[in-house]
Image 1 (cartoon, rainbow, N blue to C red):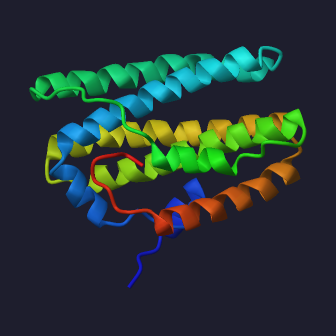
Image 2: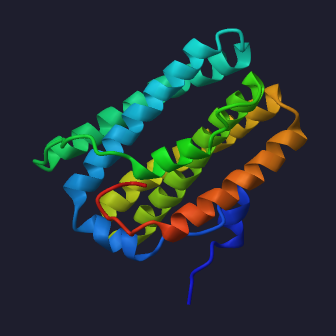
Amino acid sequence: MQETLSEHTRNILGLQLPTDPRWVNLAEIQMEEILTDHAYCEQKAATTCISLIQKNPEKTLLVEELSPIVTEEWGHFRMVLSELKKRGLNLGRQRKDVYVNKLLEFQKKGGSPMERFLDQMLTMALIEARSCERFKRLSEGLDDAYMRKFYRKFMESEAGHYTLFITLAEHYVDKKAVRKRWAEWLQYEKELMNSAAVRGDRIH
């Protein structure tokens, strides 16, 4: 029987399909790989926020709100690096992020600059929401109590980031347009998750 997201989680994140519970078990036996992928996810989040600031300097609220996120995400990258070092593990090579690449395929390539901006914001919101849901899985399902607490901190942070990108989208784009497009994104992501292989060596 397929698991469903709790009402609380669905209301917070909007996600339509939960992570397969087997993912946590697979991740636990591939901790070097999952921490490596996690480190690169944090790094990419920081560099993407920098890119968004560079491309939208006229959007004052965006610049003000994303600037501290860059610092926070880079701090998370360093936290994961420290955890790898503490465990005597190595930062491996960055892997192709199939999940994110599939999301990028759904972004509107034509249309107005504002439509493209909206899709960029919603892509980031979705990545943060799914990361939050994955971190919640790890914070509840890992056998290692220390690592459960470790991922609890990340879960709480990602939830805040998800809402920030939605808020920024609604600040610059009509709210009805945001909600309509967000519903399309959520449906697309559900289908993507439903067809994806369960991989324990990566966050997404």
